[in-house]
Amino acid sequence: MTKKYDLIIIGAGPGGYTAAIRAAELGLRTAVIEERELGGVCVNRGCIPTKALLYASHLFSLMQNSDQFGIFTDQISFDYGKMQKYKEKSVKTCRNGIQQSFEKLGIHLVRGKGILRRDRTVEVRGAEGLEFYQGQHVILAAGARAFIPSIPGADLPGVVTSDKILSETDWNYSRVVIIGGGVIGVEMASIFHNLCSQVMIVEKNDHLLGPMDRKVAGELEHSLRSRGIEIYCGAQCCQVEESKSGLLCRIKTADGKEIRQPAGTVLIAAGRKPEPEALMGEDVQLRMEEGRLWTDENFQTSQEGVYAIGDLTAKTQLAHVAAAQGIFVVESLAGKPRSIRLEVVPNGMFVRLPIVPNCIYTNPEIATVGITEEAAEKMGMHVRTGYYSMNDNGKSIITRADGGFICLVFEAYSNTIVGAQIICPRATDMIGEMATAIANGLTAEQLSYAMRAHPTYSEGIRAAIADALTK
Image (cartoon, rainbow, N blue to C red; front, side):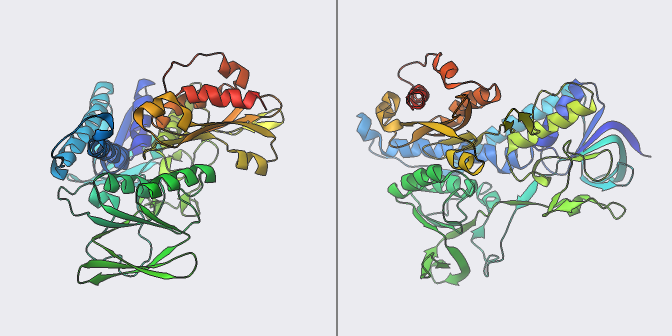
């Protein structure tokens, strides 16, 4: 017997569970189908566990250098197993919060693998055998899996993804080669370095962090190198092979030289890839583009009443993007005003784009939102920038946070803020102010009206605004 709901969601990651909660709040009878843990990759194998280990490892790193603050310790060590327990407690707390919201709002959680069939029917393969659910609407939010490139030796023991590292309780990472210098790669490199590992990053692009601003990537690369992390950009790992001491990576550098790098562990951090085909039954064929599901401006797929959000369709693989898309779709289905703008909106001579903060939790933290000066030039937009070096910031001096900057980008004629790039401690918290300013079209003058407390990192924002106003 087919069970019917107003909305069926396949996947309980940030996009799926956020959409489900909003749908239930708006009165839609909702079912969520998930074959693994609530929270998806983000809560269980991504954002939350990674940031927990980053925090714990950063504390250890601070303690190692505490003598500069007049604090001396005879012995400092870490227990990786206990770090993992702390991480797991953080994960469970987040997961339990989602579970409680589901129970409170009456959201039906179905355990099993969901397969989309025709007429918005979802086949669920679970412990109870086959079950069938039909929704007036269906949202596909199944996320993506770790991508393994075709490298000879990638299947050898000791060649792992971040999923494996985040589940291990034993410390076996004294010498690590990381293939990929994106967000996952640089954050994992920070964890390993904080715990005294020898770390090398191999990135095929000519700078770290892929599409991110080159100035930001360059500052991060300088910071990582200054702490002893080896970085090869424009390079490729051609092969991984076994050796007497562990693994050996054959790396071709940008100038054509070959490096034979020994490693105890090789971490493949080449991003995540969606698998939309695994969601489609024999009687369903959804339109695809570049390996992702095609959707229209309302996130509807080529099948009426079926929507796709998150990594299945978005090129920007961020938890908050998936969550925003989920809310956008649900509010549309419920006939409610949209609380989130995701479409491109004409605004006079220019266009207002979706405002998506990007955050990287290295040391120092990196956060960006809006467009960069380089991107503005490519768009033919005239801009002025305000720049401030965080070396002169009082809070940075107190905490010995060397390096970093704040760069604000303003449209030249209206002085409206259109972008921000921040590298410093707490940057990922500070970027919210800039996102709000861009969303509301604030000018440099309007931003300058607010006082910012002293001493704080956010004083740098005031200084960057002042710099822009002088130009």
